[in-house]
Length: 246
Image 1 (cartoon, helix red, strand yellow):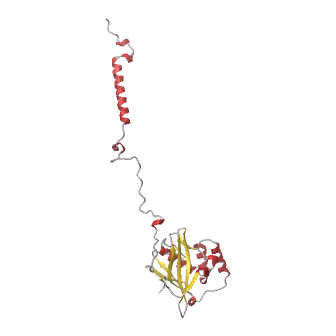
Image 2 (cartoon, one colour; image 1 turned 180 degrees about the vertical axis):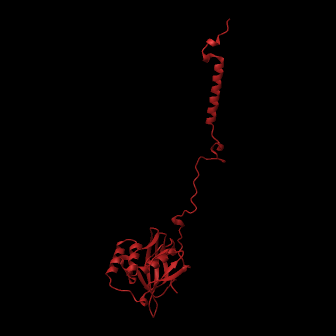
Image 3 (cartoon, rainbow, N blue to C red; image 1 turned 120 degrees about the horizontal axis):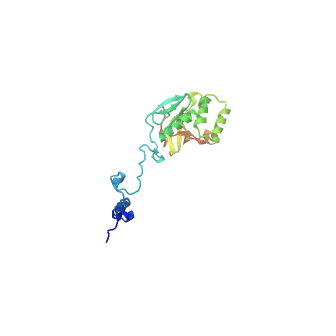
């Protein structure tokens, strides 16, 4: 019998072609198998076991929340306070509690702390006094008091008053404080003032409310724009932290 003439047969029926095709199939099958296998940590550049859940980035070291702000109120006078005169009244100034910015008539930039609220209460109350004149009280009340109808009434009452500057000897001076309540948003401070008196001491306790607004402590005007509405008179300092110029 004559041998088959391979040169006349279709290419895909030749033995060489069939062997090559089988080799290609084996290579493709091996590549598919490798692709389906789970990748190890080395494939992703990692060095340990991966659970598939992305790690949570740690919080920045300088991040802070309201819960981290100091809320413990002082039970003794702030240590780094010095007293400076505004008109004939002494006001506190602290390197840590503020104020950071002092002009000829205003003081702002208080620490977001109980001590910062205390110093702000003393500064703003004094500078808002009608006896200092409009150069002091007007910018203090208009820019450092919380906007309200009570604030507008207070300004109107001041403008309508004809009283002039008070005699320095007739002015009350800061004598102490109490914290009636405190949160990082709201501070209610009893600022104690000693009234000039030759006899039995007489004190005024003003319940001053300060709110943290726009990065600083700002005072809330008294109800109806009348300071007498938040004033209590007493003859002793029971429960009061004594504090003032010496």
